[in-house]
Length: 503
Image (tube, rainbow, N blue to C red; front, side, top):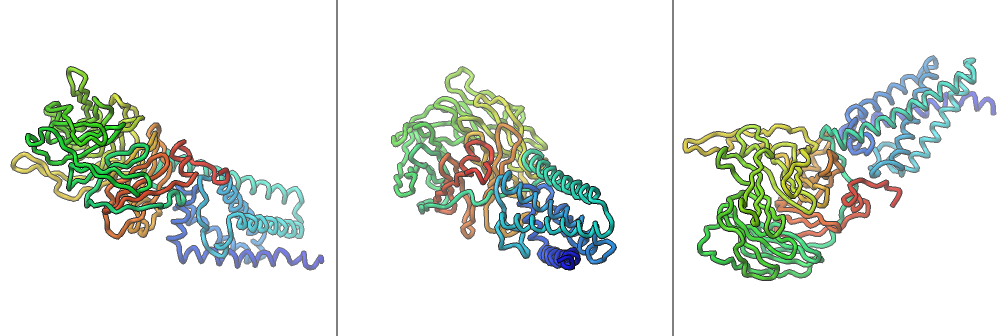
């Protein structure tokens, strides 16, 4: 028995060498995939670049130390520290992370995370035994051996916890464009094919989804929540023969629909299921975008007659001066039109405006008072556009712009933003096969995570709407309904991810 114990350190060293050589070489041969997997770790996302190189270097260096008898004890200490760090990492993943990622591959790829932790703990105990035997054979005192192991254990634990909390802070509040993809948050449950080539969401109520059609703008469709029943109503606006509509859209909210076209300063309204729409505003304001606050108040994006720049405005039909401009909300970086272009939406909580060409969105209250200027996680702070002024005084972009934010949806204090930019450590296949939606809080600088919507061939994504129960997506001429997981439902209703082991 004593002879077997004598050879334990050498046998353990060769086992560790084989394990780490295999693991290190496997990671090097598929390095990009390994770095992507580290990038999707809920604990180390922000440090993926450094950690992916450091882990491989450490594994190969430890193998070199274990080969030679003179450096074997140092190698065992290093192996002990690294395996403690790996074990702590898995413990934090299982107990404190927002979700559990896939395995990082290698020889342990088929193990579950719990099995992986048990294996690591066994390796830690084996290493501790090898250190003890080797240290005693080299006349090291018991106290010295235990002190070294205790210091290494505390250092490994402290390093992982520090990396975890710093990564959480960087990813959620000071993001350097590292996405954290949520694990299977939605599941497709039903699909309906629409008789429209360019549909858009007009709104929802408790039981129905409403869509319009840019090619047939006076048609308003209502669809049952289970996507089994569809009714289409043709809107009949009064005095329509007097109007020269160019871009008519409808919006449904609180039992009414509103029909408008900002190139013609007119807004219609009627109760749902009533086709005869009456004029409620005529000649009050020209606008490029409108979003309904209530039956008499509307958030607008319009153009200043003084500066000719885009500005946000409030149209209140119950006041003498019906239009109030808020010309300091949108901040020009160049000419004040293309560089501040974006999208305007409202909900019961806020009025939100996202810029198309920079990583910023504005959050206002429903009286258009600015609450927050917040940023998306990409790094495009200045709009990358080039504008040329033509002989007739008009301006046009003379090169394709870098579009950062495509469209968004609001639910409570959560903004769901479709991004057009690929983040760090993201495979090209993700962007080839999916549309990416990033989630943000609107009451603080806080990134919550990202999800994927699978592309259908080359069909365009016309829009998406998140409700408290389901996600609806318009892609091509199809309307799709997705169901949430319980964890995702908690995330979007509470604004914080839940521990995966506490469902």
